[in-house]
Image 1: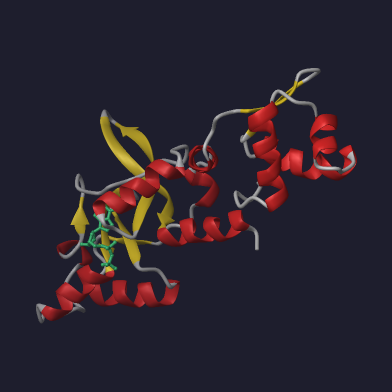
Image 2: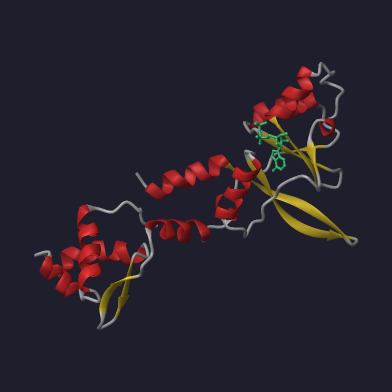
Length: 213
Ligand code: ADP
């Protein structure tokens, strides 16, 4: 994947193509007083990033895509399954105390709460734990499902959903993570099987990888 940041020479190439395109690589090289070979990496980056199109015997032309179209194209093509982390689950009978310990041990901010047969029932975040603590309840006996956010109010994502759609869900619902689920039919009832965890950290990691520096 290429970086979106363009060098001075790449910007110069774009302005030449804008003025003279369609134009061959030879002709661009001539205008820049460079060899065709020296230009090849820049042309490759510009075509791979979608800013330039290339047609045999015709030459290079501007696709008309803006850098933000290109970014949207890259992000829109990456699926949740490519970035997701492992889910961390506790049973609905787990105590708030044990759920807090699990958060520390697994180093996560959100736990999914599952039914005895393993399907998504709810989700607890750090704030949910703080709420239970402030209420002065006995954390050893209080089951986690008393303080969780429960179905059907859980915002989920799917393995083949675009990360752009998933990221918009995180923002619009002001939450840190989404369970990644497969929908299964259990005797006519739709249930969610949790197969991953999509978080703000996944997006931050991608952001750094894309820049590649
Ligand atoms: P934190 O509590 O660490 O700030 P969040 O901002 O993710 O974490 O959680 C805020 C509230 O939103 C909590 O009550 C939590 O249960 C709920 N919540 C978190 N993730 C989801 C989700 N995917 N769907 C629905 N509610 C969620």
